[in-house]
Image (tube, helix red, strand yellow):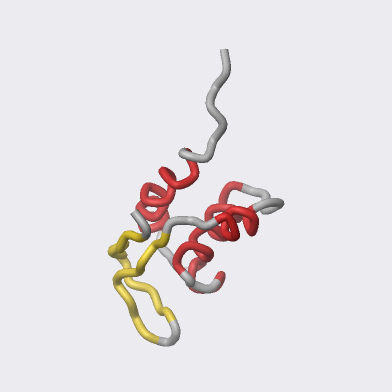
Length: 88
């Protein structure tokens, strides 16, 4: 899966136009490195959405909480696959 289309329940403005969907691409190593050092759960989530959608920080801040949850569901598998396996 290289990308998936996310449909907003609450449209946002992007580049001066209202949009109700956006492509979310799978992270690259560059995206993951850009998250290094970003602290705070919400700050990290917002930065991740910026990186994977091309939205600006201001546009991401306008996303409803309900839509952020939906974006989180889409992006979570990308990042959980990178977690180290538990050792016994």
